[in-house]
Length: 154
Image 1 (cartoon, helix red, strand yellow):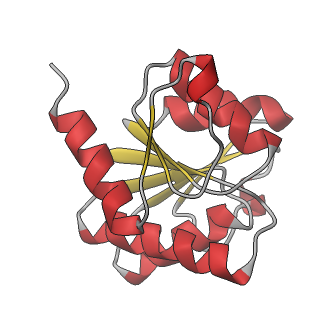
Image 2 (cartoon, helix red, strand yellow):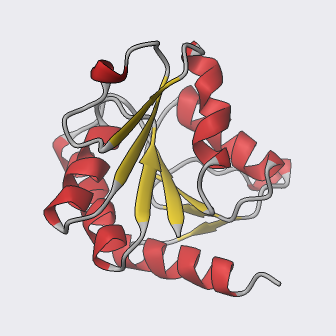
């Protein structure tokens, strides 16, 4: 399946290691990573996926595919700026949300609108707005949860 991984563009070393571990775990299980294609969480998750031979898709805010980080296999230029945040969760079967700011929060919101299963790993608490976000503690648990959510769909 395709899993959208969302999170901040400016992250700590610890957050980068967590995102990279998510990418490795997804690729090791044969899943494709979809992300925003730039730096921070997006670069780390793609780097992790590539270490396991995975495929990565970057939904870019600008109009130049060359702006993608070096670990993106399929860069998709949108020219939409922040409006591209709607396309990142749309193009995944499920979403893993990592630490991030308002951009990540908008992507969580769009995941709710598109009825995508969302798993949170050190991310926003959105329980008050009606988004069913399962919170987990490890990258492995995040991938387990998105797989279970997709397998449980009719």
